[in-house]
Amino acid sequence: MNKRINDLLPSIAALPHSEKFLLVRFVLEQIEKEEGLASGEISRSSEGFDPRRFFGAAREPRLDIDEYLAGLREGWN
Picture 1 (cartoon, rainbow, N blue to C red):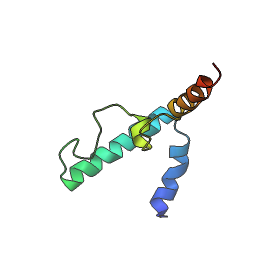
Picture 2 (cartoon, rainbow, N blue to C red; picture 1 turned 120 degrees about the vertical axis):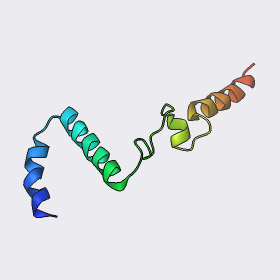
Picture 3 (cartoon, rainbow, N blue to C red; picture 1 turned 180 degrees about the horizontal axis):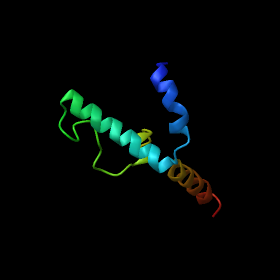
Picture 4 (tube, one colour; picture 1 turned 45 degrees about the horizontal axis):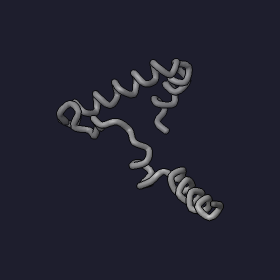
């Protein structure tokens, strides 16, 4: 790794998480400016995070289990 970066790492490691996030945000904004990107051109999702879509699960596994158990219960009557 670059010597300048190695010199900075101990200082960065000592920062609280909130300040690390601010640092990352600052660095990304600097890259946007240097690359001539419009603010927000780097992908930012405006919609909420949906873990089912993210992980590709069309259905919740619990629904599959509930349907299976319901089918078993039908035979009990």
